[in-house]
Image (cartoon, rainbow, N blue to C red; front, top):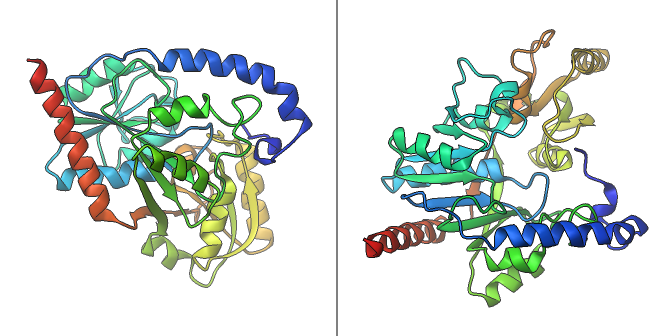
Amino acid sequence: MREPAFWYRPRSFMSYALQPLGLLYGAITERRMLRQGLDAGIPVICVGNYHVGGAGKTPTVLALTKLLRELGETPVVLSRGYGGRLKGPVMADRTRHTAADIGDEPLMMARDVPVAVARDRLNGVALAKSQGATMILMDDGFQNPRLFKDASLIVIDSERGLGNCEVFPAGPLRAPLKTQLARTDALVLIGDGRAANDVAAELAKRDKPELRARLKPDAASLAQLFGKRVLAFAGIGDPERFFRTLRASGVDVVRTRPFADHHMFSREEIATLAADARREQLTLVTTEKDLARLRGSEGLPDGIVPFAVQLEFDEPVKLRQLISDHLYRARERRFSRR
């Protein structure tokens, strides 16, 4: 879906009009979040967000994967496979699956880490454990009560924040903010913005840490775009964040085309993008997630450059200590129950 513009305005008629529905939706979600989830038997760390749409969860998961391996862990990512037709449980396989099968995010992440895709997360846990997982890294699912989480890291784009802080459909929140704050173990703020400073301050009162991070472009991607004028397109939660990242990296962005999150491109749309690029002698550039959806499409033009990014934390030592502490406490809790 494409996010309504009024979600990110302080006051609007639509937001007020939809507040009753937001209160109902929020009450249902809040009640679900209060349930006690089932224990996976191994540590579970969830990377989620408070709101619908994108914030940077996927690069956060990949950055944590690298750290966990340095700590001697064998992580397996657990994903619902949003947008895919397979219910699972199934391990993502880039040689035989497409985004239509398992979703774009699992397909993209499977290049770097084993990904268990399952609508029922408990089935996904069983599959992950059969693959030798020593811990589970949940991609999304913060509001889902099915599985007990040993720690929840919440990702927010510091430029956008949480908009009007109303619950869907009156705003972007998936549940009342107070309920979500109470279940947060750490906050990951991406970028140098100040839009989420109030949230960080509220969590600081609860002795929950704030971790600052920023998206860094891959050197090979930048080299491919050096000296070129580009037409950038993206079907992610916040396409404008992608366009800002390109410009901040020195890429000459001449035209942009935003699409809805997880958009499945038609042949006609691909042909139009290619024709527009040829007409103005522009290079097509998109996100790795979008390219995962495009792979296997008929009529896919040559020369689309995927702009790869990595998430770098300002205080990696602080992050390492945080994750180590949560893993230790998770195992200590399970050992004490024996």
